[in-house]
Length: 117
Image (cartoon, rainbow, N blue to C red; front, side, top):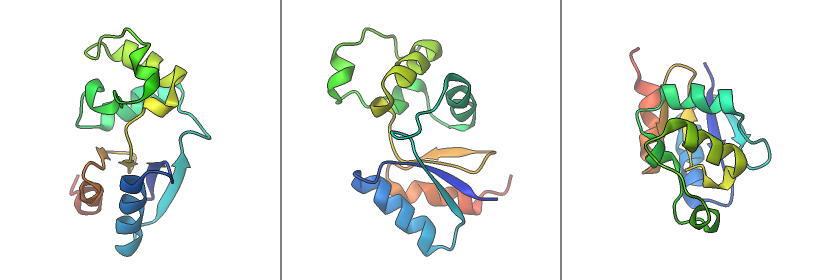
């Protein structure tokens, strides 16, 4: 099954994660989430497969973040913020359809290649 990489080519961690997956021979589908933002349902599905909370998915250092007043513990508020401001999505995220991992550090994406479930 191919791995979808939610990717920003300007991000060094995202480029590193892509290179690691390709070096291991993984079939990778790249989703440039800034060009093709995720919708609400896609984000809900992705979050259900991630072993991370909403706070881990938000890039709080981005300028857009400063203007928002959201509760990072409230999944719906996090989803609405990500729909309105795709730049806030932490990257990279690798998703095999059953499980998703945040590539921080980039080597974490390799866990999908060894998943038993």
